[in-house]
Length: 308
Figure: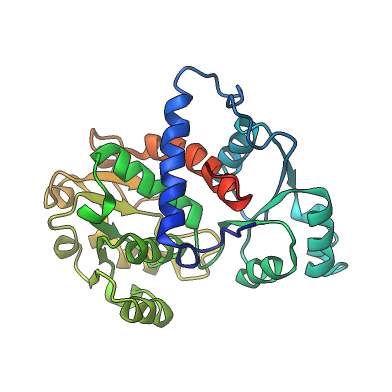
């Protein structure tokens, strides 16, 4: 079995296998309805157990559809229904029960320690559906979308991130190392990536550059990614943070400095991008969201050692 908790922990070879498999599976589903099962039914009889400690729309829907289309089933647990959330049962004991009943566990959490603890005690694969430091399934789907639209390997492209240094950016940085693509980051001076992430870039000789001016970061970009300035449970002075990011708002003038780049946004959207850009011809956010299903199907297969 294989856990899927961080991009950096997975080899390029396996990441590429996931993307290649997702491409084949998406093509074969052209004439199938949403709940029709893939003809090979590779995960027939398998149960995906999901637990969401943070709000979710796309992750919840996409993983549910992913396991269903592969022939399996999904069960979603609410944290407030479990003894774990009340401190009445340990992570290790909870993990043993999950491993007894299910075949794979997906956790979306606001506690990074839980990802590490569950990966230690589970005897079934763990998927990180989002944690404070990482959002690997989102970023791998974004890479898939980028290559689908451009019909080029991401290693040949200039990727730009405009916005906060958060969990999504952390996974994008890890992906830039694994796939060896140029990544320009545009963020205010006091919002640079953490020292740990900067050391990771340095130690892995990454093609990552950080700019404290949005207009410098976006030059020559083929793709621009962004996210909400105020993330879920962001314990900061929100008014001050929004003010700090005013010059990093994606508008038509800023986007025009790129090489006619298209926009990706992991959603939900905040005030970091104008309506004109978000709903414009170069916005691919809906295609990006739908691709979560296809890539997560291949992630499930990877975790269960069933990639073709």
